[in-house]
Image (tube, rainbow, N blue to C red; front, side):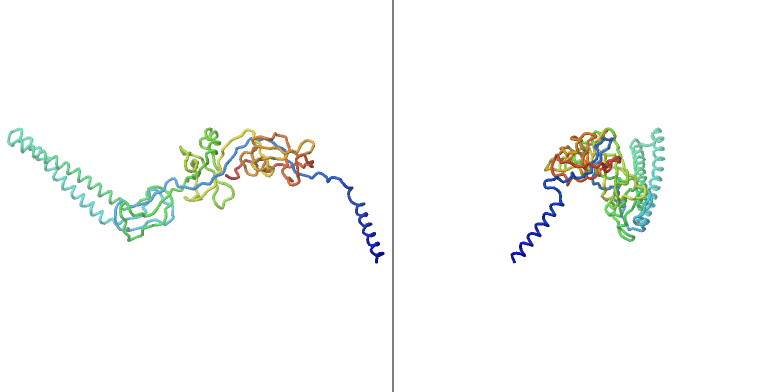
Length: 380
């Protein structure tokens, strides 16, 4: 039994020695890891920022009748595009036609009375000159003429008012745009200035309102001063990116003290009716133009509590931890305000292989993501 145990231990020792003989020598360091590096460069760039906005129609009308009556006809297809002046609703016109005829008849009566009074006043002047009537009778006839003239003006106003009321029985579109559904249908009573018949919104162009925080507004002030109507990019839900272009045409005159934001407005063409009032929209607005901007791959920027840093590869292929001051993120790249110089190499892939500053690496040069493209905002 002892003999067998001795043979077994001897065999294990031989195997261990054989394994040690074929492995690496004790204490030998592993080779430096390979990492991908990119060269820092500067380029002209326009920096953008993203905001969330809402689509608003420039003109919105709640259609209400100016006269009361029963709806006699609805003359539009719900949801259709209408032109300014199109008749949308007709209120029963018979009572208003009758009132117009009565007003016109009263006008004729007053006009006839005025003609008689003017003749009486003319004769009164002749009779007064010949002392055939008293001064009192003369004054009475002149006053009667003046009263009939006033009655004629009132009768003419009554006719005009009756004619307007008759015109108001046709409720017309005050603007061109898209009409909503009919809220009151044929046969129902509509009260003047009270009953909501339908709503109408303009469709081309459309407004997009969005709000910016105070710091972003301060950053963009120089650019906005140089270009009072910069182009903004707009995207809707379900769309990739921001394919629509609009013009910034309004900045509010004060900041909201409750939210610390200021309101912006962009106007966007809408010939196809893509934009609908009430929609949410993504708005990308330029906030700064830089002649020489240093932008690097965002993956290269690391965080240590509240500090940002990158790994720079020296000429000796050693890693150096470099603190940087970062700006806004633009797409897949980040603006570096300070800490890097053009021509330096930074690690963009393989950062997990670096365990400490000064560690040797094998750099493999690659191009930065997004280099040479436009700098678009990744988010706000």
